[in-house]
Image 1: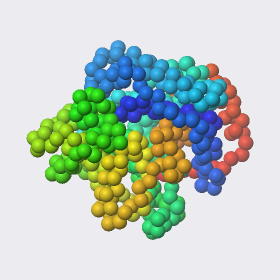
Image 2: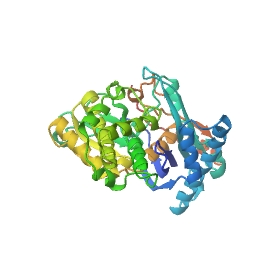
Image 3: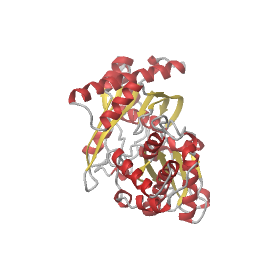
Image 4: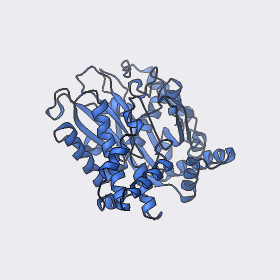
Length: 420
């Protein structure tokens, strides 16, 4: 099947669009799932819609505003997939499915760490209507309904496609840590293929969300992110401040756990800025210390919760382009584990670091269409593996159903049980 995946994350800097051909089924005896990416691009949010998203993040808006935003954002999602397909020379009629994450506005985490509800907007029916392509969206809610965190959903991609070989880098029983650094950071710990063990995944804490806020503040709104880590590179890390920030209760909370802007919020960032200012930190020092907080919280999470020895760290997301952040991650891993743990970009495994999350939602749409689970309960904390997503039929819906029916009438190997 040819599937487009759409992703807009916590930073809300743009809509990632990945178009891929996906074949196969998860099977321990078979060849498994294969993904060949055909196109990828990030379509920036128009300023009006981006301002609307941040207003909704901040709780500004009426029910009418939320209702209208659900449709307005979907129009942008639909436009993005049409433009990326056209630029790649891929007719929309060649797409079987679109998988859209939508835009998370709220991820409701109770005091005991349970996720009680989650809300993503960007109406899939609008995307299907504008493109004619059957669209699957609203993936997180089914996992939450089963008692899960609704995240990290990228774990299914990692589990099916990225398990490491035995003795990776000479580390006996070595696990691979697949770390995403988007607005929020999340990790999937993957056991080697010869080890009968379940994966583990959770949100490590802030990724770029606090860094972006700090950069916007110190630049007076002229910059939205720290390109090439230039601001952080001009400052020094205030270690006592860093240690204080690392005492945040979230970092000590055991998995399964997820977080978002609701916790690592503008209000928290502002309180951190005031602390930094009181300690005599310059604006660049503040950016530098917030940047290293992301790296330090990731390494702290590995030290506390990794199920086995870490042989390799694979990084995806926007944070991979920040050399100051990546250098801090490597340095703190070496100090924590006593050797230079290889830290590689996702691209080294054959998948674009920038496209990873969009490809995940293409994969989730593919699994949904095949009636296969999209969550990994060992990672999200759900009671059981369930099909994720709600289907909004497009003009191609009948053809897709008939094609799937024909495929199912042919023999295929028993699908593998998702890690429990």
